[in-house]
Length: 323
Ligand code: AKB
Image (cartoon, rainbow, N blue to C red; front, side, top):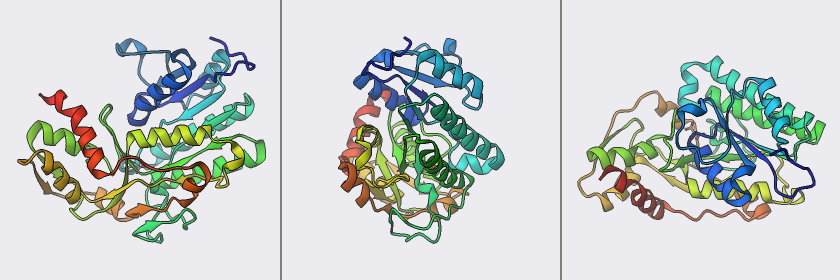
């Protein structure tokens, strides 16, 4: 499937394709561009993945030669680079997390420069914010003072993306994702993961012990909105993108206690208890919400799911799994 540059359809390589975002983004991209146009990559051996629904290659994105080889072989024109270690897991082995998050991004940016790729997507995160950000709602241009190695890697990554854009003309686009909630693949290693785990535990055991305190409000988003935002940003004409760093995108802001109340509307016997751990101090350093005027202005961003519709949608999909 070597790409002919004159062809209209892009050839898209996705790293971290088996992760929480990748699972849904690959499906959405295949829906738009066709199954054969999207090459999913991840660390797993293809032989161990019986459910593959399109092209898949095993790839450790720290292996620059293998990455370049795939880009050249398939005539890749766009990369969505999703492989990363998230906030909580990153604190367990900071240097390892830094190496994975930074070196992989630099490998992707180098490949984009050398192979003259059309576009790159790389996710930043609300983890770039820290204690000096307005606690209630963080503006686009807040001072960034991340408190985790993951957040530091996202802040540095935003700078590297700006550098490659400025010096080499790489069209790299980015969003600061909030905590993402989805039913099809588990979240892993993040601070916001409770908002996914709570659904599984509620359906399986009728209770959940939360590692954040009841009133910890954080920015969150349903995965359908996140995927739609990503495709919208990537399809926007470059001239409209006035914010050339990573865009804030807002959707939901809720606490564990508020989510528990909403769950109880569907599952009256559900109970929640609290036992905070190290993730609480990470959550305390993040704002409760983000201000996203620039995304709304430049590429017409608006979320579709609120707490009520997100909860109902999650339960619709997960209830049959636990029946
Ligand atoms: C995490 O909790 O680390 C992630 C994020 C907010 O980027 N979900």
